[in-house]
Each structure stands twice: as structure tokens, then as C-alpha cells.
Length: 258
Image 1: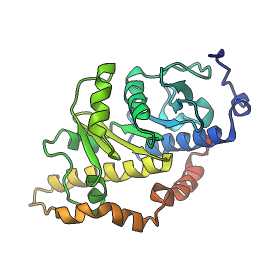
Image 2: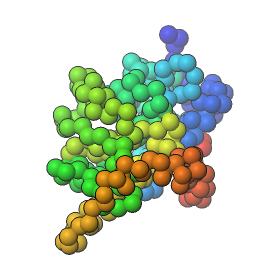
Image 3: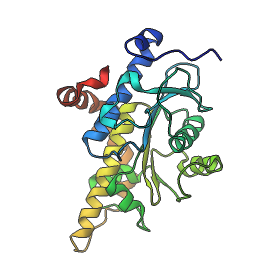
Image 4: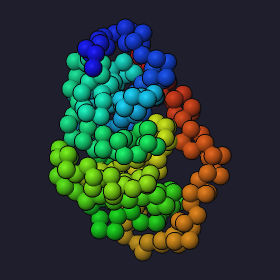
């Protein structure tokens, strides 16, 4: 492998192709949106995205930066072996690499992997039944949801095959006693999926706190949710909302493009 190149300042944009730069901008936007929606956990958790092209490279956050600070040029480019492809002054969290590298290696369609420690998500992940069919939001999640039991902080590579097995071909993963994870063929898909997963958890926690008897949605409705989602989004998935989300971000936190 060639010696790492510098990522200081505007020089990075000259070192990477247009497709990679576009992916960097999208991923940096996703980090800032996660912060804007209040799903971040100080400098912990991660969102990763595969770099377009034949190489097995992906982008992940510089460990130690707040999500609201992340920009396109600050993202760290690594291979599936965890080594930096471009030089960076920032380390990569080993726990984040364990989870994300496992999924990227196993799922070609997992272009973006988004993992959060949201309060509502962890609360529901600690419940024996997990996510319940209580809201319209939840039916889209439940039609493609898997669970993975807690094994401690994700530092052990031995956990990778179990994580991959439990996720299977699903879009949503609830990490028991830990948090939430979504995958997407685009950064937009992974973010919008997380919006529905976290919102479903928030609705469940609030409904349970109300103390009244809860009405569950029938299994037949859940079974048809994916077809309904495709119709609602005109087959665009998360991309239907992404331009509007970027417009909002450009108003309140435009530095993600730098």
C-alpha cells in the first residue's frame, strides 16, 4: 500500500474523486443531522459510508469530534483492515470499527451503516418484547427489524459473525441494552430509516408512560408495510426527504460541506 497522503485543509478535495467527495458531504451532513435531532452521544457512536469504487474503503468519524463539528474533509478514510488510507491526525474508535466493518464486509447493499445510542432507543432495546406495533411509524420498522443480544462493548472481533447473522437481510437492528442501527443503500436511506426507528421508540416510551391500555396494530398491516412505504416515497426511499433535510442543514449548520 502506498504511503498515506495528507488530509490537511482544501488539499483533500484535490486528492479524491468527485464521487468520494459527494459521499463525504452526504456523510458529514448525516452526522450533523444526527446531532440536530439529538441522537448523538457526546463523541461516541458512528456512522460509516462506503467510498464509491472497487476498493473496500469506507469513511468514518474522527474519534473525539462532536457530530456537529464534522465536515467532509475531517472524515477518516480506512480499509476493512482498519488501517487509514489517507493520513489523519484523528484515531478511529475500535468499537465502532468492529461493528461497521463487519456489516460493510457482509452486506454489499449496506453502503451506509448508522449506529446511535439514543435514549428512547436504548429504553426500548432493554424491554423484553422490544419494539411494539403501536404507531404508523413502527410498521415500517417492524417489517424489517432484527435483534442482537448484548455482548459488552463491541471490541471483540469474535462478535462479528453473530452480529452479521442476527442482522441478516434486514434494514433495522436493535442492539439489546445498547442502541439502534440502520443500513441503507445511500446515506439518505440510512438516516431516514433511523428517523423512523428512533421515532417509533419515542412513541412507544411515551405511550407506555401514559399508563393506559395500548392498542396494537395487526400483523397483516405490518406485513404489507414495505409495499406501502414504496408507494408513499414514490420508490425513492429516503431520498424523498433528503433534499429538504439538506436545505434545513444549510440554514443552521452549513459547515458540513467544508
